[in-house]
Length: 147
View: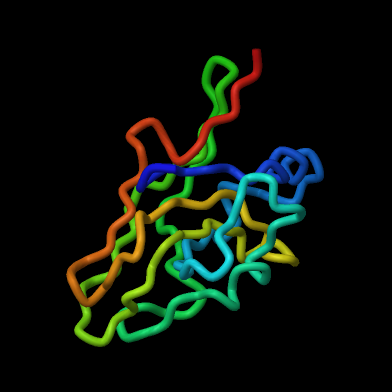
């Protein structure tokens, strides 16, 4: 997997059909974890609690991750798109975490904090070396196509 690749958890398709998410109004968070237990698309019932024990820590990073600031969920011509109008950035900090490997996007409004997808950060990435930013793709975080 290349750095920056976003992988959707397979269970997310079931979660949508089970009405676990109200994507435009729920609080979505992106949290950073180390390499202790790397997520995979096939993880069964992925929730933030599966990964929170591997969350990085240090100055400049708040436990639980950053809340996405402008989530939208739209549909056009049979394609539903989850997007965020803001990108996520953690500012460089001399006491920041040095062991960032993955970002996990999860729904903190959902009772179990269901995980949606994860990003390979190409770790180890260090907040001590500079800002750590996630810039969402211009066409959205993820799309669901009906054909």
